[in-house]
Amino acid sequence: MSLKTIYTKSKVYLISFLLVFMGFTFFLAYNGKAKSFILLNSYHNKWLDLFFSKFTFLGDGLFVVLLAIILFFALKTQRLSILVLISYIVSGLLAQLLKHSFNAPRPKVFFNSNTYQHFIDGVSIANCESFPSGHTTSAFALAFILAYSTNKKSFQVILLLLAIAAGYSRIYLGQHFLTDVLFGAFLGTLISVLTIFISNKVGYRRPMRFNVVQKVQ
Image (cartoon, rainbow, N blue to C red; front, side, top):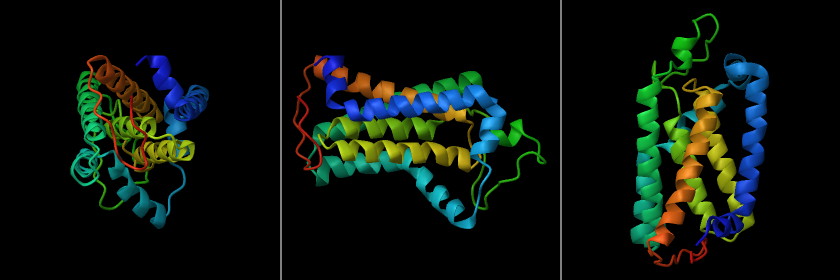
């Protein structure tokens, strides 16, 4: 299976992703790292605090592993489960390698206490290893694997929106800058594309049987 075929089967997702990615990249370039964070992080209330503090776990490793287990044993979609795990592990390792290599400061350290005050009770904020966002990387890796596996265009869009919300939660919670989130989204998507491409090249073609997803050929 060629990269062109992968693009064709997930065209709605990838085009939508590209448009959103370009839009936020322009926003970042225009406003800069600090101002873009302040603008995206400027509005808070207790309901959004609660929502994003829970929703951010969509990009957590535990959630991805539990979903993979459900896909494997309960829904009998073994190949989909394995691809989810592979993309998560590879993208996660790369994200961690980059985090330790750059060791970039997170907003808590980057800003002084007078500039940024939206700290949320119960949410611990790290000081360094900001770039890239690991949660965002995992969320987008998962989203593309699932989007590629379905022929429902509306489901592809929903998956992208969920991944975007997970990425935004990292900014809302004061954990990451837009730069971290954008690169994490790119990295997660890229690794998922390569995971699918390589799995077909090495001949692993076990079909999927989940009623939401389409068999990968």
